[in-house]
Amino acid sequence: MKPDIILRLVKLSAGVTAQFLIGSASWIFLMRIISTFGSTALAGYTVAVRIIIFSILPAWGFSNAAATMVGQNLGAKQPERAEKSVWRTGLFNVIFMGTVMLIYLVYANNLAAFFTDDKGVIASAAECLYIFSLGYLFFAFGMVLVQAFNGAGDTRTPTIMNFFVFWLFQIPFAYLLAIELSIGAAGVYWTIVISETIFTIVGFFLFKKGRWKTVKV
Image (cartoon, rainbow, N blue to C red; front, side):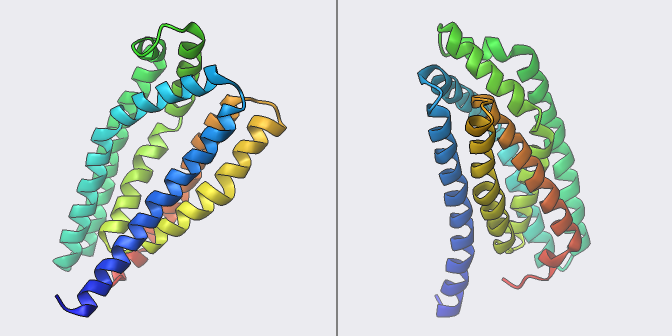
């Protein structure tokens, strides 16, 4: 394999790796904040995250499909078709996540009760699911946008977005709401919803600008 090809592969993988590390590290800090409110809040958060991870797996599948279609269409010199595929995939993902949102709003307590009999933990997990679900429509579209950038080879844009939104905004704001303003664990949950909303709005405008269509891989 030629050195220039290896260099391009490393460059692309480094961007995606950085996105994963930034996102994972921010969740660790958020968990640390939640832990200050006791074992019940932390256990509830843990239960809620398990449910969330399981329920959004199909949404990640839609997002990865968007990345594939963007890459294929850009390779075929069809940037407009690539953009259209993102909007369509985003719509499907919003419909799916909207359905999940309704399930959380109606059955959050039942879902949490599947993992534990502790009423305090169930209430804490249900609160987390309720609040998280309110941002799911934005989250659904944001997932697709991130993978669309990555599929186009523009790993730099989502990496910068992740850094500014999840490290420079989300962590300090979560501390402000949860601890300084004494909202508690719910302050962290609301921060996540707000952060995902901001992330999606920023991603939407950057995607509309179309720079990703000109990235050379």
